Length: 55
Image (cartoon, rainbow, N blue to C red; front, side, top):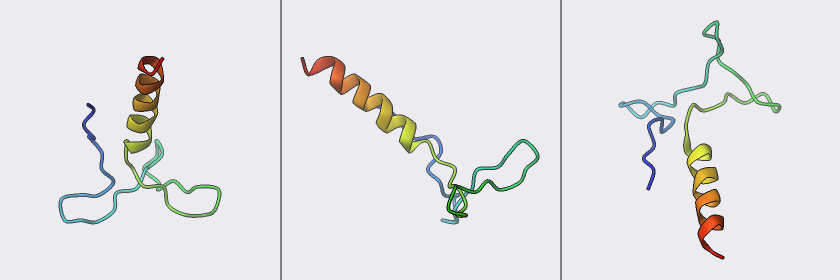
């Protein structure tokens, strides 16, 4: 199983936001700050694994 290395919050519980190469906070198409986490990548890899073994 995978372990998240970026949970989206720091040690004090504050959200950590994704930043561009210049250090500016990045925003999504709706104007919301993008949380810096790796949970989407973990879920994608799990689905690939699951689909490869279910047959």
